[in-house]
Each structure stands twice: as structure tokens, then as C-alpha cells.
Image (cartoon, rainbow, N blue to C red; front, side):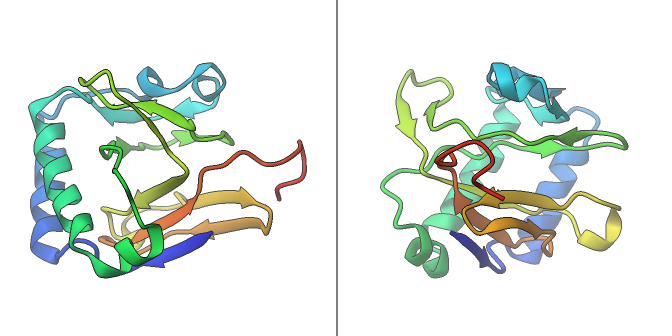
Length: 167
């Protein structure tokens, strides 16, 4: 599965979210805090602190949009949504080849959720940065996405059946 869903966020929402994330007071931390052992070896980015009021505020905006966005609902048929995480990459940062966690604990709740699908919501215009393509390896080979700000890509989060089998 590799589904592009355009215009999840409005231009006004994008402007407000970007302004909040760009504030000097935004609580960015090392992205490895949410990576498993293998992911931590290839993850070099920053992440908005999951328990911060800003992360909660921005999550609420995005989840509200997703819950009423017909193309998203049709493509994913969600029972529950894992709260979005906010990542940023500066020059030289990257998140290398990894497998997204299949079981995630919802921050602050103690509840666990199975995550069969992953999604990336692009918040920055692709013309404003070099590189940064999302690369997904699946049964169909490697696929790349570098979408317009406000667009979302949904993809399978399952493990490949055997090493080297998926792209």
C-alpha cells in the first residue's frame, strides 16, 4: 500500500502549525527518544517532545482533520489513530532504513495500539529543502515520496517476509 492523500491540511492550518513549530520555545528533543534499539542506530533528527502541551495542541488539529477527511478514512478505515509525532531534520540529519514499530504505546496513557499502517504528513513545501524524500521498501520495491505541504502518504507498516525480499 502506498496511497497519496492530498490537502489534508488547509493553507491556514499549515501556516499556524509551521509558526508553532518554528517558535524558539518549541520543545525539540533528540528523535532517538522514541526509537527502538535498531531504529536508534539509524535515526538522526529532532522530535517535538511527545508530552508537551504544543505536541498535544498540534495533534488535536491533525487528528480532527484526519477524522473528517473522506479520502483518508476510505484509504485507511481506522479503528483508532496513533497520535502524530512531529519530526524535523536539519542539514546532515536523516532516518535511515528501519521498520516502524508494530505495537506502540500511546503517550501518557499506558494503552498499546497495533499500527498496521504508517503515514507521513508533509508540513514543508518540497521546494524549500534539498533531499528529504521518504523512501519506502515494500513487496513492490522502493518507492519515494516528497509531497506538497499538507499532503499525506499512507503506507504499510508491516515487516518484510524475509531479509532482502522487500525492495
